[in-house]
Amino acid sequence: MASGVFGLDIGRSFVKVVQIKSTGNKKMLIGAGTTVTPGGGIMSESPIELKKVADSIKSCVETAKIDTDKCAVSLIESQVVSRLISFPTLTDKELSAAISWEAEQYIPLPIKDVNLQYKVITRPAAGSNEKMSVLLVAAPKRVIAKYINVVKNAGLTIAAMETESAALVRSLTQHEDPTTIIVSMGALSTELVIIKSGSIVFTRSIATGGFNLTKAISSEFNLPQNQAEQYKHAYGLDETKLGGKVAAVLKPILDILVSEILKAVEFSHTHVGEAPVVRLIITGGGSFLPGLSSYLTEKTSLEVTLGDPWLSFAKEGIITKLAGQGSVYSVATGLALRS
Ligand SMILES: Nc1ncnc2c1ncn2[C@@H]1O[C@H](COP(=O)(O)OP(=O)(O)OP(=O)(O)O)[C@@H](O)[C@H]1O
Ligand SMILES: [Mg+2]
Image (cartoon, rainbow, N blue to C red; front, side, top):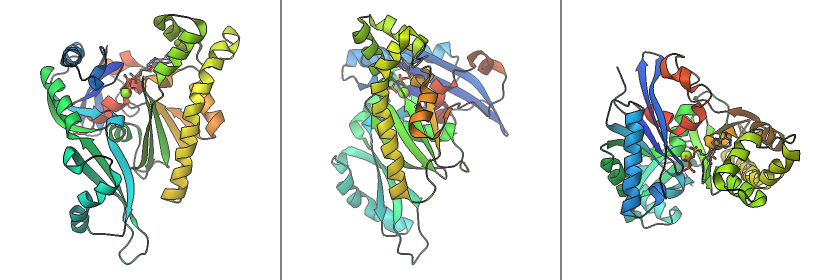
């Protein structure tokens, strides 16, 4: 049976949709597609622009031959506030009574204006002096209302909503994996997510993405945006191309990311205890930058791999036509895997 819910990732440069069919342990990709996101995308406050976003979602769903109108949608990470907080060990009941009051100290928004979710990450045994850690996620009600409206204007309904990082964890990691940092590079931002034993212990959204790289090439070589984009795809960090000039423009921007990755890894060592980060999964459209994996290996000393959300999928049907492109669908696949 086809899954009743498809995954919808409304990125700021591309909309991505994914539908999956699961039979027993077998997972099959039965629909996938991407369309350019018009104008300011979902971050826009203009009803006209938001209507265009709805139209592009609709056309993406039609072209990808998605056969359900129910979707799970991801919230852009920078629009939500995620915090890992420590508590004296509480029972579920005590925690649910304490959480909104506690959240006020950590969430820089009035609690009445947000939807609050939380998940216990570690709970030490009763009587232990150690603290429990809880991941708090607050999404502004105004943002949620905007997503509901855009999706409704696309002729669809939202069955579930979650953060991009929650979707990435589902599509790219397994519970038994070693502690891992996912680096998801989109157009306008890069998401860092650290996962330990299947749980998120750290998230950060950095306002540096593929668009910054294109812009830097465009201004350095005085090229129009589309040509700068081609340079980026063709040369990337390859030192042997154009005398390494493109690589030299890109590296200082990527070094901002590297420094944030190293800070995140350090944070997880000091705050989450043993089981250090050993693995880095790079994903999102930006992960296709030539030479990026080896650059990150050199700078972080972690084991770097390109994220493939379809690794365990049956290699039949449309997946064979999309070989090597999975990374851009990591969020949409994680959403589709919810059901
Ligand atoms: N081959 C490639 N080499 C380098 N960069 C690439 C390549 N292919 C795509 N990109 C970049 O990937 C980015 C788009 O990726 P993606 O679709 O994941 O972003 P998005 O989800 O729309 O953005 P965001 O997550 O910031 O909202 C663009 O900046 C694009 O230039
Ligand atoms: Mg994205």
